Amino acid sequence: MQALRLQPRAFKEGIETVPVPQVGPLDVLVKVKAAGLAPGVLALGRAGMLQALPATLGHETAGTVEVVGEQVKTVAVGSRVRIHSNVNCRKCEFCLTDRDQTCPEAGLMGFQGFTKRKGTLFETYRDGGLAEYIRAPYWLVDELSDNISFDVGAKLHEVATALCTLRKARLKPGSNVIITAPTGAVGTCLLKLADLFGINRIILVGRSTERLEAVKKLTQVRVDIIALDKLSENWVTKKELARAVAQAIPEGADAFIDLTPSGTDMWQALSGLGTNGTLVHLGANSSVLPLPMVAIMANCWTIVGTRNHSRNDALTVLSWLKTGRLNVDDLITHKWPFGEIETAIEKIRDRSLPIWMCVINF
Image (cartoon, rainbow, N blue to C red; front, side, top):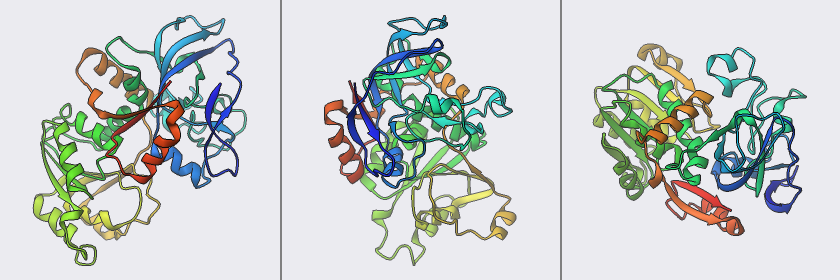
């Protein structure tokens, strides 16, 4: 079969021909119909930061069941399914308290391992879904109702991550929220979910007026935008963003959801976080937060780091999609066939297209 693979010390992914995975007694073999293409895994791969290589990339997968193991009773051949890519031990304190994404043995199929332990399930199921077939343990296979497309089934991962982020923000009905860098997959999902959280107002902070105006239409909540392309060339040194946010919400926001992937300049927007507010970071930014501890103390801020989502987050989103309480079909803005995946990767990297969610079809 054809698969998008990354080899050790290669620093660049490539299409390879590999065997179809062998199915064990507890396994399910899925013929892939749609797989998400996310910038994070591509960036880490090029930076040489992915572990457990060689591996097939892709942690967002949906398709039809081709083969089931002899002990599998809950999944049927021919079923439309999505794969929950978070592999964990299923028995530690974190796994048993709806924090399984932080399991000491956790890893994301087709993405990253978060442990150096040997003999974990992740070692067996590290290959992801940017391939013609994927193997997964039966308990990580979720059936898709007919109203959920394969594309949405694959990208459900992003929606569940956004749900987890909002839950970490400790929002109450009527809350005001600042979101930075909101025009990608998770940011657009946050806007879709805002209607279900009773949020009063959202302030979006990003680079492009055009792209911010496009995403603000995704929610019924009041949205105001602060675009960097409307500030002066010297906005960083003049602290223009800090002033703009403080003026926009003088009472202070209840939460600041930070999706900024790099740099510290966007963090000027923290001027808008109110007393007792919560800062939630999901951007994987390696920069040092330029924030004195006294500011955290004086404002009684809570700072939360979050990644991925729990099994329950994914099942909640799956239920909302099935019942029609949530619809994210319009977030799938770009699709490419697997044969054109190199073009898709190039477009994601050069940011020339306003991509919210990108899917590869098989």
